[in-house]
Length: 379
Ligand SMILES: Cc1cc2nc3c(=O)[nH]c(=O)nc-3n(C[C@H](O)[C@H](O)[C@H](O)COP(=O)(O)OP(=O)(O)OC[C@H]3O[C@@H](n4cnc5c(N)ncnc54)[C@H](O)[C@@H]3O)c2cc1C
Image (tube, rainbow, N blue to C red):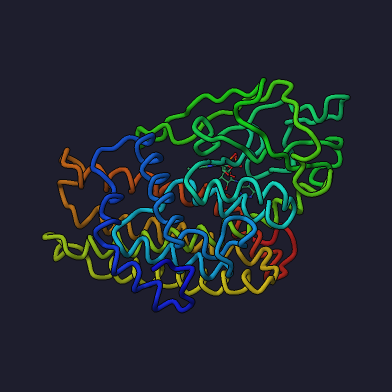
């Protein structure tokens, strides 16, 4: 039975129950490298797409099975509950896939099916050495020539940039003075002439992100996502998914991590208020992002309110990983067992959760000004 043949969530849950054995082949392996993790994720997507599971929530024209973001959220939840981690390509799919869907349907029709089948990986080229929180000051330039658009500049902290096949590059097509009004989002083939990617290592020792260099890279008009000069609007659209659906994906993983920690021998030593705090923040992310996904699936604009999801997620990441650290006791710092290494990696990575996708201080300002309506600069 494929999931295309069934409609109700209960049937999807049943499918996961019926395929425990096959899914076991995709359970994370201790000590695997990032490259191996990406390859395992791709193989898992191929299997899930063949079964009609991956693709729920995406239009049929793009290799999907129809439905909305709610269907995708359910699949992510069930994958994690089956002991699997979410393939690396799903985060950029949610972020850039939402932009392609809304602003470049032809690109979506070509590329979304490839990600769903595990055949393509994307990255997001927004941040630059001098443009992170202040994204509107970015300097990568794109100008029109006889051959097409010519892109030159540098991106940084591009997750999986050195492994990706395509990148959504935000570039300046207007003047510097135009700030956010002079930006355009381009779809760039990472194998094109003039593209270079140098891996950057995180504290966890993995080459998780990269510096991406663009030296007179030529792309044609079909690679413009949205209108020329509309890049900021496209970026704001996709940030709803980057902050909303990412929060949902991560809360599923964090619930799993907390559950595993609860079974640990030294859990009795962990202060109950730390556990209670972690559980409360995590529950608030789940409730909050469920509501966000519901709104997005109805076509509502969530806008700056999605910063609340992002702030809560950062807190939940850190609170849950603190509990895991305490549950491991001395082993957390000293053991070289795979479980301790995994926990250390997750703990260090959780510190980045208040930075990636928008630093928490900036998100708090956004909530104060754009959601609550306080005047700028009020502290
Ligand atoms: C793990 C990870 C993965 C990432 N992946 C990607 C990716 O795939 N693609 C991509 O484009 N980017 C990515 N990033 C970059 C990320 O989006 C930026 O790090 C983030 O936007 C912050 O920018 P910055 O690092 O330049 O810090 P800055 O903007 O320089 O901020 C430094 C500090 O100053 C504070 N600050 C800045 N402005 C203000 C203000 N106005 N008010 C109060 N405080 C302020 C910030 O809160 C922060 O604490 C990733 C980052 C991380 C950590």
